[in-house]
Image 1 (cartoon, rainbow, N blue to C red):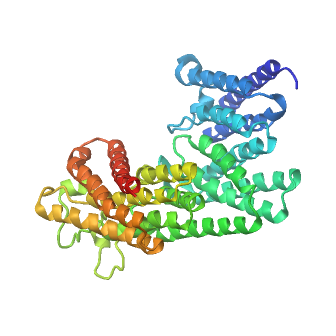
Image 2: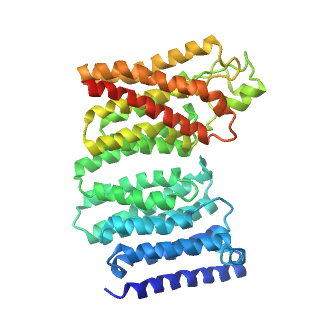
Image 3: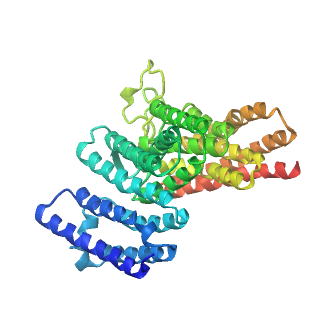
Length: 474
């Protein structure tokens, strides 16, 4: 192994020289800013593919990452450099910390791969080629746009991402490993789809973290599977993605958030089993039918209701007596999905760490509580404290319990622990419901929804802990 300090100096010199060269190109030819950003992204990504042969310890890579972050931060904040070399990073008019996340992901990935070139290079290849080329294709050729958290993305860009991610996985596995041809093909297809979902839901440059780290975890786990297991996972992934796309017009979620639900569904199924998929699936299917619907032909919205209830149709003329389904405004983004899934994912992670199958009870309760909270969030701000709304809250609690726990009771054949936990779950749902009902008027007055999503995640997670009393008692 050559001198790591010399290699570090060469990498830093390459970064500086690349930025200077791109700045010259930018000044002389004024190409699209996305070309300049990806002109930095692709060569640097390809350079990192040499790291398993340049460094035998993670320390030099972490030092490199720290120096790169410091340099890039100076370019973003120091005015004389910001107006020159900083334009290489800041030409695209959107808030992003992608260039900061990039060296972080390289260092973490290098440490996690533990010297395995394949586990390091394949995720980096996906980030380097698939993400960069998809962005350029989306900018210049994207026609079919879909809403994302911080703007819009394109179907053309996502398809390009899938294709390049597929080849970034398939070719190295086929040429450099003893993995069978069928396994190689299925692994590449699964990773292509799942990492495409991660890219679609990422915001503010977080794709530079999600793609390599998510790709590493998926690659490491799927390499150990046989053809049958891989085929099942591919079919489940394809079915989940197809379902959320077909169901999209019946929800209040934008396209990026819907793809996020597909990814969470895959995690629930792959880490827990089909029983763990039921709760998030029931929530996604049922909540559009439970939240309050206002017939604006009979009861026009007041200005205050229009300001708060933004998920109701902005154009009442789209509502007719012959419309077979409710058509909501799709205004909720991936923050809403993360808020709803937070408690459930916590219990799912604990299940994987402890292997206690009874944790499916608080997991299900977390989603049941979220279903109730979603319904309460749909209440009109007018006459909010009227007894009619109080009765609605009680009905929401009961409906959520029935939808979530009756199927679980049937599947588990009514075990004592389940019956006790199911009884306590009514209390847990009620705790979350009361907390949100009492604080929602204050949360609605906030200038952003950040505190709202946070409180909903906290209330429902704490409410789901109530069922632990039954588990301890049994």
